[in-house]
Length: 358
Figure 1 (cartoon, one colour):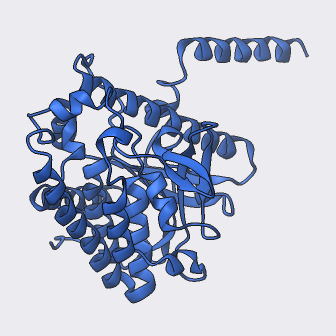
Figure 2 (cartoon, helix red, strand yellow):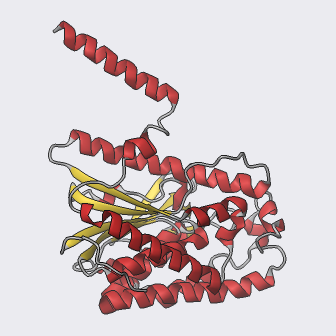
Figure 3 (cartoon, rainbow, N blue to C red):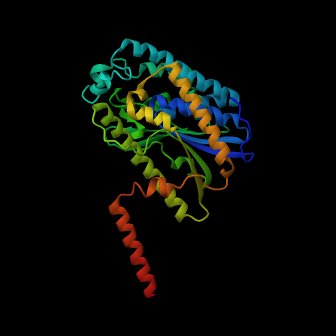
């Protein structure tokens, strides 16, 4: 693909990446990353990813370490090619249970345990990662972007962050371990599930060492739905989205607090969301997220590339200058809850009264 005009991105712009999880929709993120790699004026800084976002981040860092931008493109393509190849076999073996529109498998997910139904566990994905991810590159540091991934500790419910010091293929598997599909991943004798239940993704590592930075998030989770889910698979899908949304809002609230309370802090947030068409498909058939296939992945990749290209032309000039998303209007106010908003207004009114008396 070729863009007709060049976005107004400043040379040397460093962009930290926040990559959400979303199953097969991670192929949309693949397309976004493909487009960012085309932009020579953008340098990839730190990366934080959850679930499919963690896998994309690992392939991106591996490719950059091996052969620069083209290596990253090749490694991302290899990751999704191998996911399609492995998934096609598994989908065939599980027909008709796992095809969209034939949702028996998805309806059964809330009552069937992966310890009963999935003897292979995450072995197929482990093979894919061993063929596409270089653990040494993820831990190298230096000029290679630092990658952070998160997973949920099953026993405590706390979120664990894995970074250059301890990141591994096991950590990537843990971050992508959907609890109704896979048995918990064991790391150092502890059990871990998909990180999106706590944060999708964790944001603070992207600005911990530099409060004057740009963060670009690829958003795969639909914030608002007009309908109330009634089928088992739709209910489960929305429960997962609710956990993801609340984790993200908590991360953004912390970021906003830093911007407002720390002198000279300028953490600029940017968000690229999936297209309305793809979100509509997920709304009517959530099992699409768990579907694999080269055709679907390529459609999503192209959607991601075009969406990122359009975003860069519309907002690229803002990188390094100011945020392109209103965090308060999009995330913080709608998800504060009425009681929190009332309390905030009460505190503000009391502060004004006290100030007036002084």
